[in-house]
Picture (tube, rainbow, N blue to C red):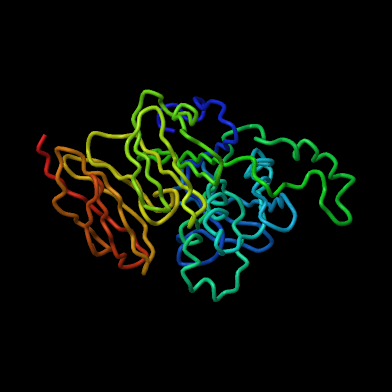
Length: 353
């Protein structure tokens, strides 16, 4: 994260650490994939960097690493987390957009694993597709740990030389029942970095920031993506609360608190801006940004309005401002993108400090 990164993370039972430095995508071909992000057959993917860096490869090919039998392998993501996007791209198997659709889509995108849907096409024209829309494209992540959280399966991988024929299961197959419920993804962009913490279960009265590698003396905003709710600003740690039965998971966007208005998240992707933000900066009394929206999909900016600042207006290009809502120091600026181009926006504030 911003202050120390994962070098400061301490041991927290059942925590997977990941990092992304360039937002790179894959998965299903749809308007929700940004230009330049494509996929090919047989689990081999071509991923083009959204913001190519000097010396960065233009394209990378990854092999499908099936980590379990039929059925989504939640446990396998922790049993082979150090292999993902290093040896192969983890394939936890297919996702079904049923009543449990929010949970597997979230962990697949946070871990940068293979994203595969197997519903009937008609489902994708219903509200059931919402979790998929908010989790593609899949970010190209790197493991934040050089070991597997649960090495019980990968430690037996050597037996694949003699146990790959016939029917399964095999001792090295990834499991289904998760022992890990927290997925921490660090997003490092040229203009800002922040942490996304996914939770799929477990009993956590409090999650300490120091356990996530954050500054224990710092104060952080915590925004929950699925419910679009600002939990507040906290020092030391925060209480995640119960899982909402609709989502069966939580996606916390954690950003260090600033004294001026700041962007907390966008509505485009569960990473709170990881795939759609090109730039965000505070200049004078204005918060300026560049975003990539999807035509026909409402795009919401969640911005703080701290004491001493009053929102005045939003100047926007390539989108239309539909409405402005305020609640407890949080602004919701709802935009309607005009096309697939870059949206430039500037939120202007009166500074009475």
